[in-house]
Each structure stands twice: as structure tokens, then as C-alpha cells.
Length: 449
Image (cartoon, rainbow, N blue to C red; front, side, top):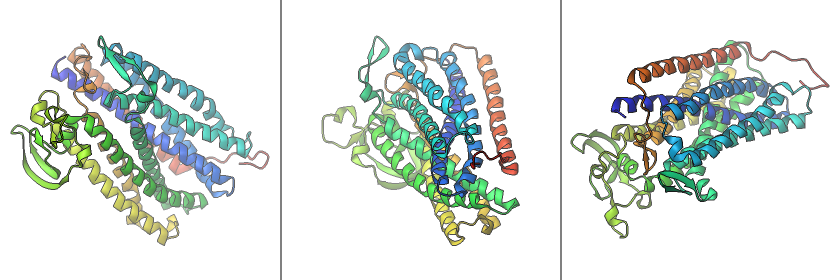
């Protein structure tokens, strides 16, 4: 597999995976937001107005996320034909469980959730919404377990170049709970910023209603909670992942030469060709239990770690790994400041959207893009930092790569960009249509809307 083919294949796969993960996270966050709104709607009418509007956006995110996930299944066979041969006994059951969960939970209950509100009692419809949220979470869980296993292949053994499962509890453990927490908190963050952004735009053209005020206050509080969860889960994930991935740890610090651990840099300009930092702003030392030991010090007590020079050929893209981690931290800090400002402003206004100034509305809309950038940087760091491995430490992407011609790879990448661009544009247009026209009222049935 040539370098160009490797880059093209990787770009295609990461583009599809990133698109799918974004809509999966958004879908996951909105599902639990809808469940909470439906619970609150049994005691007050305002959350029901918010629920009916956001149920349409959830359905839109679900459809586009499902459409984006289908090419990934095909790419496993076309871009990485050797993957299922090496890891099929692990990936096959996990993918099958994700598909089965999708059909059993979401497909069975989604129709009742979207169209059965007038035919079901309030309690039954609330239970249906909860089952949809549970099904969405289970689908995401199986996908996350597979992604976590690729980062740290626990609970399996490699025999004759084929992975076999030896312990399901270990396979479902590892970094999977922390990674799932990152996905859930990221989804809640995306949902909260989208709620605030759309509320700011809706109330610019018309007076707000009780539903808008419910969404404004709920979104502001949810964003703060989701940010705290995201920071905690990301720290937990790093605490588990860095000791077992020496190349990622060396790139994050960065540590160029094996030996005593260097201090963690806050910001640096990396001179990769000279294996040094051209400029660095030194930060605190890396916690010792976050550091992987160098092979020579594995059995000792010396605080030594492997350097990037000793990982030549098997290290990730240093610049991308380093920059993505710093960008994620920077965007998390920026979003935290903006979230606190939005919450403080909302408290002063009594969470009345009509009182927002023009700059306040721009700030709420900007937060949605900052949250999106944070998720792209965080998941990008996770994926790029594990290169060049498909299964970390054992199976490289070059071993399982495609033999397709470069012309074919270029053509497919161009078509993929067009398709995903069309899906993103369609999502934005339909979101704007829903924002402009709202929800069409439905007839009442036995006193229920």
C-alpha cells in the first residue's frame, strides 16, 4: 500500500467516521433531552411545547446519522479488506449488536414516539420516549466498545494473526466506559448549544413563548453540566489511555528522547525534522501515573519514558497529535467562559429570550460552533494519535489496506465530499425550515395535544 493510497483511504474513512460520530452524539444528547422534557410535560405545559419542536430536530439528526453510518460498513470491506480477517471475531459481534439494537429499540419505538402521542396515554408516551433514548444509548455503546477496543485491545488474544475473545467483561471494560462518557457528555454539549442557538434565532423574529423560555433555561444549565462531565471524562480517558500508548504520550508532551520525563509543554512550536522544540512555553510536570515506562525501566522505579526518536516509523503524526490536544483544551476553556457568561446573562434576564441583545444572540450562536470544534479536535486527537495502528500495538493500517487504484480512491473521495456536503447542507436547510415554520399544530384527542 503506497503512502498516497494510505492517506486517501484514511481521509475517506475518518471523514465518514467523523460525520457519523457527530450525528450520533447529537442524536444521543437530544434523545435524553426529549425524555426529560417529556417527564416535565406531565406536570406543566411549557415543556410539551419544547418537546414537540425538538422531537422533529431529533428525527432529522437520526435520519442523517443513519445515512452517514451506512458507508462506513462498506468502507470496512473496500478500504480495509484485511480488517475483518484479523479482527472479525471481535468487530462482527459488536457491529451486529449495534445494528440489532437499532432495529429493536429505535425502529420499534421511534414511530410511536413521533406519531403516537395522540393515541397513547401520557405515561405510555413518556415510556416510549425513554425507550428511544435507551436504544440510542445502547447503539452508541456498542460502537464505542469497538472504538475503545481498537485503542486498547483488552479481553482478546492474537493467535495466528486472528483476534479471539477471551473475556467479555474485559472487552466491555478497558477504556470503553470513559470513551462512552466522552461521547455522552459531548452529545449533551452539542444538544445544549444547539438549543441555545436556535432559541436565540427563533425569538429574534417573533415573541418567545413558554417553550422557548424552558429551552433557554434548560440549555444554559445543561451546557454547564455537560462541560464539567466532558472535562472529567476526558481526564479519565487520558489517565487510562496514555500509559498504554507511549507514542501518543510522547507526542502530547512532547518527549523527543527516551529518558527522564520532560515537563509538559503548554504551547510549543515543534521542529520535527530536528527532533526538538523550536519554541516552548513550559508547563507543569506530567503526573507520574499518566506516563508509560520505557522498556528499559519497565521493572524499575526510574521515571523514564520512551521518546519519539525511539518510535520512528511507528509514531503518529506528531504535529497533528500535539496540536489537536492543545486545540481541544483551548476550545474547552473558551466554551467554559462563554457558557458561564450565557448562564449569568440568562439569570439576569430571568431566562427571557426576548431580552437578549444582538451581541448576546451572536454569542449563543457562536457557542454551537465552538462546541462543534471541540468535538472535532477531541475525536480527531483520539483517532490521529493511534496511527499508524488499526488495532493499537499489533495490526497496522498498511497491513490491512486496500489495493484499489489511486484514480478510484481520488474519485470516491470527491464523491464522498459531495455527498456529505449535501447532507450537511440539507440538515442546515431543514433546520432553518423548522426554525422558520415551527411545528404544525395537531388535532386534540381525548384532551391531549
